[in-house]
Every structure is written in C-alpha cells, then in structure tokens.
Length: 168
Image (tube, rainbow, N blue to C red):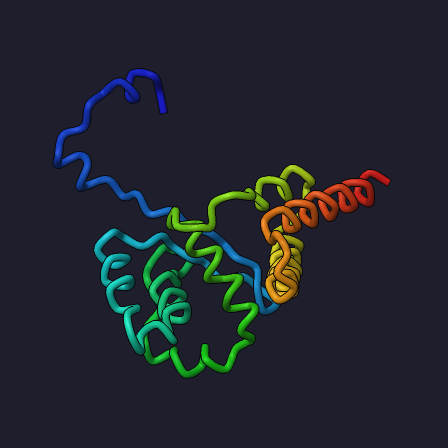
C-alpha cells in the first residue's frame, strides 16, 4: 500500500465494502485444506453458542465454519459434524489452533510459527512440532512444572536442532 493511501481516512462505505478475508492453506491428511477468517458476526455467534452443551463441538464447528474452496467460497456445513467427530483429535486441535491464530485469537506468548519459519521449516513440520508441544504440555501439566518456561526451552532446542540439521 502506498504512503498516500496510508494517510487517507476511509469513509464508512469504504470500510464496510472492503473484502478483508484472509486465507490459510493448511497441510493435512496427505493434501491441504483452505481456511478463511470469520467475520465478526459469525465469530460472536460462535462464541455465544459455546456455552453449555455447545462447548463439546466448538472446535469442529469452528473448522466447518472456516472451510473455503480455492475461490474463497464457504464449503462447510453442519452435516459434516459426524464425519469430523471420527477424525484424529490431535489433528483437529492443530487445525483449530491455526484457525484461532488466523482470526487473531491464538495463544499469546511464544510465536512458535515465526521461529519455525525463521528456521526454514515447512507447514508439515510445524504441525508435527505443534503435536509434540501439546504432548509435552500435557506431560508438564501433570508434573506441575512451570509450563511456559519449559515450552520455551523445548521450542528453542528443537529450532536449534533443526537449523543445525538443515545447515549440515
């Protein structure tokens, strides 16, 4: 965007007519899926539906609402719920984490994605590392250890090891 455009104040019509959906291609199941950010209304509805029994299916509903085709058209529908319930929970959790981050709701703190990108690793490696970190987090939580500190050490150790392997 040019500096002149950065200094321009937008009208209400310009703000509301701008297409601001962001997309993410996520490698999974031997291929990739495409996810799109959710508009504020959809996200608010989603958050409100997560009280009570809706909390159990929140992640799957978020995936379904975020699925788009190559042209950005929404392709998810609730008839997919039962099929997704049969998929690997750790894979679904990784997709949900990616969706939350895409929508600006990801976990604050460590920017693992930036560290991995700096090491030149691909999205498949990122998903593998994400699963490893979840397992480590569960183990550390059971042990009652300072989780954030140990996660940071684990990420740095893996990043350093993979950087060394890449440069070898």
